[in-house]
Length: 135
Image 1: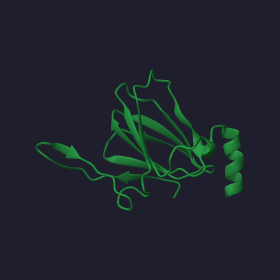
Image 2: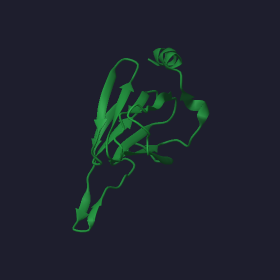
Image 3: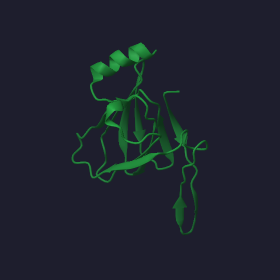
């Protein structure tokens, strides 16, 4: 499974709603890092544009919307994230590009790894070479 949409369960009452993330329940890994992307400037902003050798990710748009281009080396898909009750799981060695952020978008990302620049592949041609050797 290189990527998958995961439905999240919201718990709430008259005070509001809450969604939790738990390893092995709705998050397929133990979380070591969390970051979010917000205040993107203009409709042509592309974030990501890389693959990771070890990191897996869970993407959740907390507010607004964005699109995610997913390239597994054998298949390219495009996913619209526009609901905080849907998460997108991305396995390691998946090329990802997040784009078409709405003006109010907040994209939260959970990861199984701490940040390590050496595990990033930022050149698409290099990614294609590495992924063809990993099949």
